[in-house]
View (cartoon, helix red, strand yellow):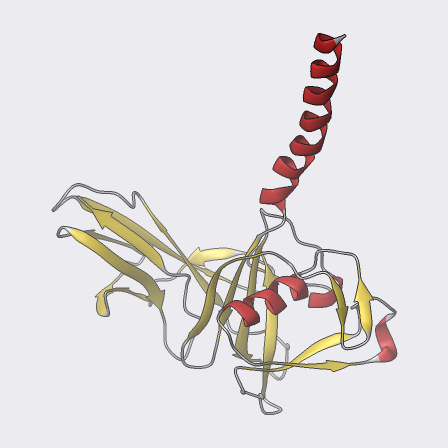
Length: 231
């Protein structure tokens, strides 16, 4: 009888613990917010779910991640509501971030996995594999296209001291199509290095941790920041 009761307790605890373990990692999406002149936020943010300014949702959305990021940093987040798009959070639009309200020639755009989103932040679901990018951008008045966004990858982030690391910089259009960012620069701790026509550059690293990102001022939106640890 005692053994049966012990097995029942173990089974009950397992049933309670397993869903929490599986659900936990799925709650946080990666989100980056790029302002007109500087990065505002980069990191993981568990989407806020519930009531926001009188409107309620049960979905984990890109807007929920942005709300959480604005509270973690923190930074000011201005939202407007329109009845055009249905209930839940579908009618929310970003009007300002970090006290910056764009003029008529710019706006706060939103990409999901480097592709310009077809729906709003409040109606776009996210998972732990989602990469959300909210960015201040001008646009082409004829085509409506936003500025391209940069992405950077590294052959390794943990090289030996004086070891070589090759970086590849890509430029993404609104469709998420990648091309080599031949005119971009890779900044290591603020020091700029030109990339080749294929969008690559190979650098050596001294001992320690270095911050790395790609930029193309006036043309494209800066890339995410990488950290390289040489030891």
